[in-house]
Length: 176
Image 1 (cartoon, rainbow, N blue to C red):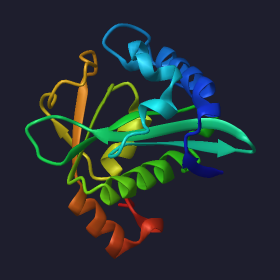
Image 2 (image 1 turned 30 degrees about the horizontal axis):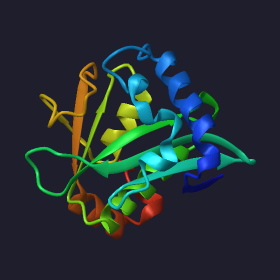
Image 3 (image 1 turned 135 degrees about the vertical axis):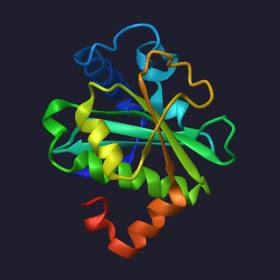
């Protein structure tokens, strides 16, 4: 398994993965990423400064991905964890854990202080991962992501994440 930046040749398959996972969780409708115009052009959508989209490749095949991009809200220097979806075969192997660590390290290199995300309660394994990483549940959404059908919102202070990562090391990050 390798984690790398998305390339234009990955656009079609990543769009298919995102739609398949959204369908799996009943989020193939208005108010979710399902409608985002960039789903088939992810390499272009994440090509600007302050953005990154990474994919997980296993045995030459893309099995998931996730991104970070600036997020406009009442917090300065906030990014959003976006479009992080893995195929069922890629779950439960620690690959999502490794992907989120890499995305948060990329956010650090881009000098973000906070990381926000929106999700669904029924994506319970993803929610568990976010909580393990130190994301705190919010009472309401920050800003306007355009995904008004999500029912849980989380925020992570990246300075706390980086301090834990430095103290515990990447291998032990998030263990309780």
